[in-house]
Length: 383
Image 1: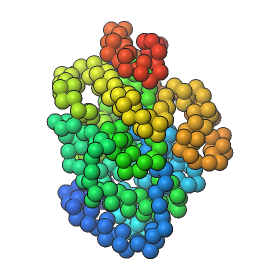
Image 2 (image 1 turned 45 degrees about the vertical axis):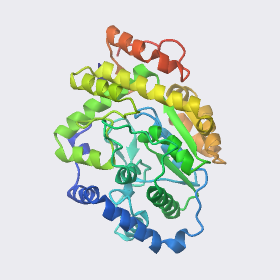
Image 3 (image 1 turned 180 degrees about the horizontal axis):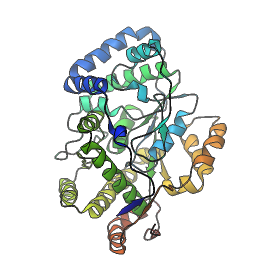
């Protein structure tokens, strides 16, 4: 399995405060009321957002542990970027009201702490984060139901959602003082075509990672979250409310339209076949993505694939391509600052058996080749 040189996250990392638990529960139980409140907020903010348009929004998608957080944090450094932040939670539906309140409230020191993932990434309330999933779940109640396809393609039409989403983005741009919306949401992998139908000039960033290392990281995170949630029952509810089903006690794969494959993955996990379950999930999801990029040429043109290995071995060139694709100008100072800090992970090493590595290779090689991983993935050295 995997071996980590770091201590697991402290139980405190999974603690959910009384306030967060109460308010997030209220929002989760009454999404329709919060949608109405968000629409009321839009009317109140009408003058402030009247002249704000949505131009070339940037969406970072991809399976968790593929480098999406690094890409989001780097893009968020740009002066034009407007992102969700940790401070926006729990009342994500009303960013204009909530941020005015937070700005007026007695300030707390923004002390950086390592995030729950125990992966060396430190956060403060001002750090960018993925919270828009709460809005998607309020309008599309089936998005995390493994018994239904979770795909939203270019044929989908939901005027109420689309208006709310556009207004939400405009309010967030106003609150942040930027001009370009930048979002990270792993589950957007099955919604990119829908987003492109809403925003024809959208830019997508799709991080991918060598399956052996990627699966090792996914297993490490799942074990970490399971242990943390067992000692903090509220943490499971928190993960469900923010739409974070990648790891932990309520883990669910994305159903890309193949019900048999989804049930097969769930069965493997339930029976303790973690490595094979993750390998089949990796293969299924990446085949789906490669198929959509092949069929939909407009989506292919709008999408930049960022291989994790390219990001860690040549960060400057990779980040330059990232900002060029996003059409965010004058990014060289950001690249110069961030590139030296990016490196391959040193806090864990895959420690699969030879048979497990062979299994991963057998299942994922064809899908991996479609993203430029030529031949069988390299065998990692044991820790």
